[in-house]
Image 1 (cartoon, rainbow, N blue to C red):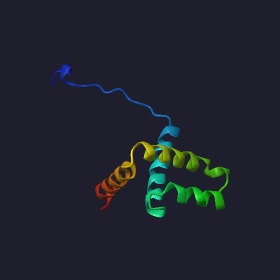
Image 2 (cartoon, rainbow, N blue to C red):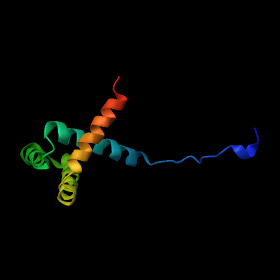
Image 3 (tube, rainbow, N blue to C red):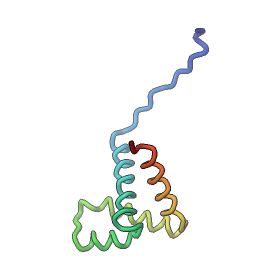
Image 4 (tube, rainbow, N blue to C red):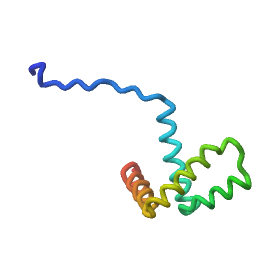
Length: 92
């Protein structure tokens, strides 16, 4: 095969912390939808009652969800669909 038919894709190195953030937020979406029925206030109430500084990331995530819901009321419907599609694709 001639050399010009090959495509070279450069390696992309992602910082480990950025991948952890994606995984954490994916887990948070699942928790929000499954345990708190998509209601960030319910989760924030639990954090107020039982939480500590280790949950600061959850609080920031929930505030972001509240802002997104204010801008787009269909946000949680989109998240439910994404989680469902992911589950359908990866379950065996």
